[in-house]
Amino acid sequence: MAMRWTLGCDAENPQRIAAFWAEALGYVFEPGYEDPDGASIVDPDGRGPAIGFLRVPEGKTAKNRMHIDLRVAAEMPGDAAEREDLIRSTVARLVPAGATVVREEFYGGQFGHVVLLDPEGNEFCVA
Image (tube, rainbow, N blue to C red):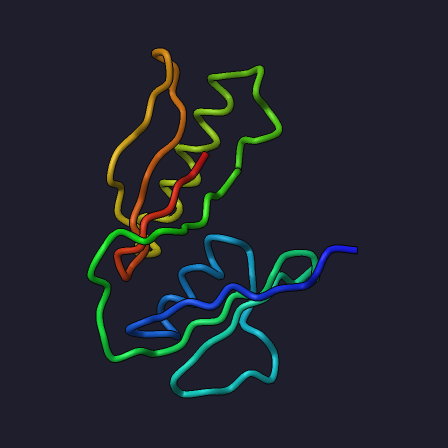
């Protein structure tokens, strides 16, 4: 049996960054978790890991060594146009929520994924 785990993240503003990732992932704030210096979001279906955000005094200073990839089009490798549309529509939904587009990646001339920054400057991809 796989071990249950939580992704722990440093944050400047835990509530804001938790709200962004809840929107991005379809998560909800963890019921009963109330900490003015932290926030926790969970998969409402109980399948994915919890993600905790704790306020830290220092800001982000370098590229993160680990990041979340949103695999919105993973189940449709055969239809390139439909896959690209799904990725682009997800990016379009996340930009008003606070994401910033960094670049698009192509492989062999084919659209691959989009690299973005979350509201605190952490890199992530939509593929």
